[in-house]
Length: 433
Ligand code: HEC
Ligand code: HEC
Image (cartoon, rainbow, N blue to C red; front, side, top):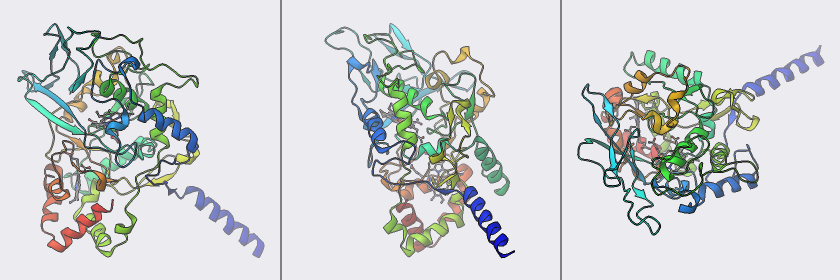
């Protein structure tokens, strides 16, 4: 009897262990989260850090020469002060329309994207008469900047089931009596034509897959085409074979290395010294008390090992499975009064050929509804950002908080009613994230 009891207690403890999520590894030490070995991770980081040249396919229009030029603080994959420019205008029916940017003495018009590239490879020695610099016409009266975000830990975010975000949106809406209702947006998985998933990356939740995002960024930030984004923004002064990103000896293209680098990275680490102070601990309680955590959700959990994601193209590996992490974000779109009015461009993010595919559950009106919404900025690593909010226009944490209106208005009011020592404590907590 005794033995029997002992065994059953053990069995029970074992099954408890299996279902209790463990903590995702954190750090800024360039180690992996266990998905690959450190040597493989270093190779992938090398690709992420590589400075591309015109001979590699850089441009014709671009913003920077490497991923890490914009994702670098305090190490590759972090954030930076670099911002990109997006513009557009409202059409006759008041709907957002992408800009029309003339290049090459107005002989070509760049359409179908809200992004404006700040750099170009021409005019050059090879093409002295080709003028392709993009400049914003005065008629494009909607204008904004978007700062480069952190991508460390995004492998865990990718591994969260869609249903978690759907449930979160419902729960916060019920709990707040419809004051805070995050929007879920289904977006195409470019590597799985026809399939969609809940968008979670980018200021507008424009991607769900890190591979799709990598191809999007490689084309739109660096001008490098790949198998997923095979069409150049302009064919002027182009000389390199298409797609520019060709598989290496290991069969992997650069976009595969970028996606694996991000997936295998550790999550951002807290400032543990500051986090342990009584002031920061009090601030953490106030953060929840005033309701910041309704959107800046502390903890999410990844799916079970073997779960299929991204339209069946990605399987959650054991080291990423059933992991708890602390992004302080819900990855949902909200109107907190800071919206820039820009509806994301379909062809820019999902490719010029996206309309030749029927995407499951893709809703253009849902995209249009998000014109004035921004994804809740995940606050992990926020102490390492010098310019806050999507446009980088808030340079202190307090300024960023006070800009929250719309869905967050009642929370901001509660924050404003705190005693000044309590506000200090809440800010100290943010400085520990
Ligand atoms: C010129 C600067 C710049 C370069 C170069 C750049 N990015 Fe980004 N990145 C950004 C900005 C800005 C955002 C936010 C974009 C948005 O949502 O509008 C971003 C967002 C991301 C995100 C989403 C992060 C999140 O959690 O929302 C990923 C993933 C990413 N970039 C990957 C890459 C990869 C891979 C490369 C290299 C191929 C790259 N980026 C190159 C500026 C850059
Ligand atoms: C209704 C949802 C919601 C609530 C409630 C909310 N936030 Fe936010 N928060 C957001 C969104 C959305 C953004 C991004 C806005 C933008 O970039 O324009 C954001 C951005 C931020 C940023 C800037 C982070 C960065 O990396 O740029 C900070 C800091 C912040 N929030 C702190 C707070 C604090 C503190 C509270 C409570 C007093 C709070 N938020 C309440 C949704 C919310």
